Length: 294
Image 1 (spheres, one colour):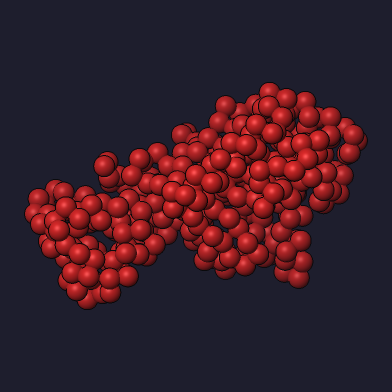
Image 2: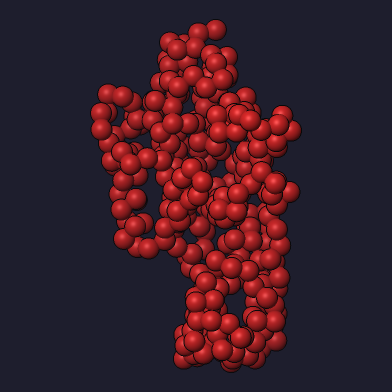
């Protein structure tokens, strides 16, 4: 395993915790220590050790140091790499400043999204957040927060626009989005907003790191009838893929092999049922001129 020694612009605290947790698990297992024994060493429960090894909680540097000693890690250089990883994993992400409008369950997703090498997403109702224009994003935000103040609406839109910076960075992730035709026909914000959004999607299809497909109505029923979901893959082989399913007031994160296989198969079927990527710009232009003429 290659352990990063700095957070950098592409590795958020969520993934750093996952990397550190995976390394601690391997060290514990190779030393023959049980989770119960590790918990006893740092005055914590077995379940706390389990959450640490999954990267689901923050790390105290003292606890990591005690565990490294228990696991027989004596080399100062190796210890320092892991202790620095623990310090970096506790640093807040860029989205921390939006904490007043950002639910805790979504903060975890932003950390995963920021560190993903490949993001595959299927959307039914809306254009994916990473591809929304600010005007379209405002219309979506108003649907769920119509009673919010103008300042809060601005901050929610600003957060969504901030997420999109990852697609423009030096080493951007690959985004493969499959979009149901219904989302393009739903006139959020009015014809002018929708025309601008479809124009932006046409531009997005020209970027080398973005692949966009549309599932037309003529496809009938399809593999993901259950609703929208995303699959995130990371550059480090020690990190499992994550399936993200957003609900109204919470989210589900799946990383078990059976779940991953199920959603990966559904995504593959969607990509087959959708129009091929090379036809996307043509379809978007036709829908724009048909539904939202200038």
